[in-house]
Length: 339
Image (cartoon, rainbow, N blue to C red):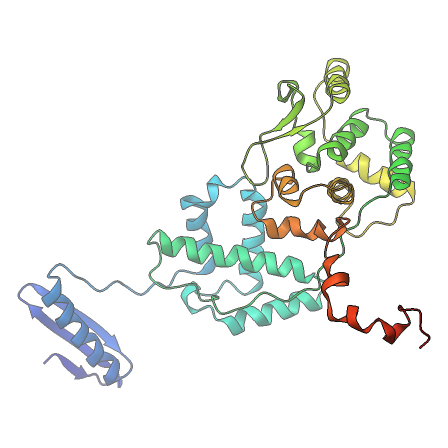
C-alpha cells in the first residue's frame, strides 16, 4: 500500500512510481502524504532521474559560513561584514534558516533599536542578511527564497549634510597644524578637501598615482578607478611630502583629535567625511555641474549626488517665476500695496 497510517498517528508513504525508483517518507497528516506521493509520481514520469531533495535544516550560522566560502571571500570588507552577520544570527538564537520569519527578525530589530542602535545601522544589517539569502539562492545553494523579502527597511529622516565654511576650514587646519604630531594628517586632509575623496582613498595614495596634473584613485569603495584633476602646485607639494616623509600612515585618529580641539560641532559620523561634503558643497555653490560632481565623487547613482543639488545658485529658482504665486503678489504686498 502506497500510504498507510502508523500506530503513532503519522502517515507513511512507500511508493514506487517506476521500477527501481522507490520513495519512503513519513508525514504528520494524510494530506501531506498524498501530496508527496502525487509529486513523486508526476516528477518521475517527467524526469525519471528526479529525486526529492531532503529538507534543508541548516541553521543561519552554517548558511553564513557557506556564503563566506562561495561569495563573501571576494568582498573587501568581509571580516567586518561576517562579524555583523554572525552577531545577528546569534542575537536571533541561530534559527533554522529556512524557518526564519519576518516577525522573528522584526522582533530582534525592535530590541536592537531599544538598545540604542541607530536606524541606519539596522537597515544596513538587514541588507547584509538579505544579500546572504539572495546570493545563496542564485548559486543554487538553497532552494527557497529570501524569508525576509517582505521586511521593509525603516524609513529614516534624511540627515543634513554638514559642510565647512571658508572660515571653519581655516580653523580646522590651524588645529591640525597645532595638535597633530604626524605630518601626514594635514596632507591627507588637504587631498580630501581638494578632490572630494574619502579619507581612506587619500590615505592609500602612492607617489605613482599622483601625476599628469591629477590624483588617480584605485582602491575605491565602488571598485571603480577614477582620476581627479589638481593644480601643479598641489601635485608638487604631495610629491615633496612623499619624498620627505614616506608613504601615508593611518592618521584618522589624529584628524579626529584635531576636529575635537578645533571646537567645531560636527554631526556624529561625519568627522573626516566633512571634508568630502565640504568639497561637494562648495563645488555646487560655485556653479559646478551635478553630473561632473557625480564623476568626481565616484557615485554609482546620481541620486546620491543630488543631495548637493540644492546648493547650486540657480537650483529650483524657477519656482519664483513659474509658480502660481506670481499672479498673487498682492497677498503679501510685493506689488507695492499694503496687506
